[in-house]
Image 1 (cartoon, protein in one colour):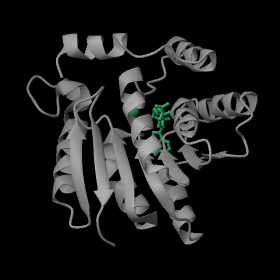
Image 2 (image 1 turned 180 degrees about the vertical axis):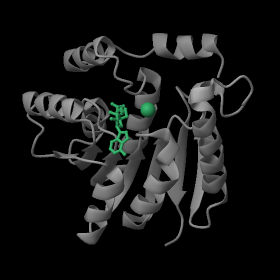
Image 3 (image 1 turned 60 degrees about the vertical axis):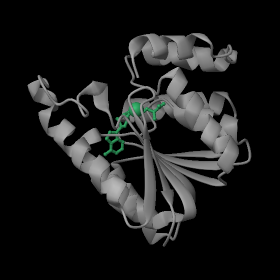
Length: 214
Ligand code: SAH
Ligand code: MG
């Protein structure tokens, strides 16, 4: 999407609750890469339509997206994984402050490990949101996918990473590997036997993968 369109869509969004604005400020001042407003608005819309009871998130940061997903379906329960201790603690604090601790469980640790533990405990989810280290999306997907019910949805954020994924020229050296991996990831999603996927050029790119068979 071009910048003008992106700006326009952000501009016409309705005003958000005060707690939402406060968390956005918190993310901004701490330089935490939470989902942009237009992107999260889209994710919330999917959640309103799908009404997932059980949501799994990889990459909590300060709890912003978990709380917004819950806002879109107040009956849901969310399990979310964060490996950075400071962010984990900040998320816990934000979630407690809004009294959502009964519905959002934050797990501290590396998702590569924690996803395995969750699947060993027979967890099942209706929606999975992948938004952590971009170079590891394929691993997150492989580990999380078996826990997704049929007709469930996997959302992957940042799959068009700053435009570099679609146009991998002059990619800063520190991103070349990650961009390559995201290109492989997108291709894998598009060709997955069990899923049908649409990639939406909203925010930093959101892949919507719908599980059509077990
Ligand atoms: N979903 C959040 C933003 C997440 S930012 C929101 O939109 O509000 C990505 C987060 O993933 C960072 O906080 C980072 O610490 C975390 N992360 C990166 N790799 C991880 C891993 N392997 N396991 C768990 N968390 C990870
Ligand atoms: Mg993201």
